Length: 396
Image (cartoon, rainbow, N blue to C red; front, side, top):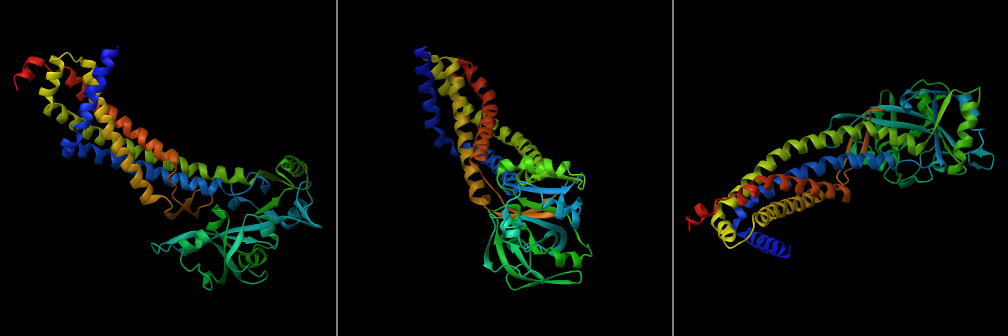
């Protein structure tokens, strides 16, 4: 056993030391594998960024109330009297006699993207005076808060960066309405930063909604108050509503698109991986062919076939590891933090977010690279072990 191990270490070390001498052929495998890793990690970073923006939104101490059966804010509807009943529920945090619950509208307006000037569905949310007390993780970072009763709006930082016209002091038009941007807000990188906020009462008039809303966002006394709050509302005969934690709602909203992006990412990487494996196979066959006399000499000196197989596989894995590291580094430098926006299929509105190249994705890319190296080196390793010693030695 010790003899086999020492032989394997010696042959493997020799193979690895001679890689620089075969840099041109080795570079084919490295570049191919690095390209696959770049594509895999960069595509999956889209899903990671979108999921982080959606699942990072909300708080377990806030509850979202919608009409029963609605699957998103767009399909929900609540009357003014229902909102009044909701605000009486136990478990809502109060500021004196005022319940910290915000009745809101949610509409879509068309604005061009900054990068392409193509129209995009941008969410506009009508809010009430208690909005910032309910959303305690939101703050105005430029300008000021809107004045209620006017056509003023505040915009999320993500929306300001992605869509044209959403800068401080600008006016935006939607149909017959003109809105003036007076502030920019942040919401811990959540989906709210993709939105435009205005006075819900003004938005009701602009869209002829009467005294109706779509959702109520309530701040609870604590996370433990949720069950009491939900049970009271769902058992109340005056209401026909569903109650969900805000975090659960946004997590569910991210699932469909995240699954689609991940599926596409793995499919593209699998197809590219086939090409990279062929590149690794050709590289290792070339390495074995150019070193056939050396391998035969080692076999004639008593080195066993298993040591040769392990040494060739180790070289292939080393090349794959280099490609995996280079690909992961390129993906991180090129895509991590890149700002973009995409469609949320649940609400058909744009969500601004940043690509996220996480340690988990980098690890996945490296493991995938090593897998390609292992597959690519297996056949050449077997061929090296089966080289006929007399024929190879006659080449000396």
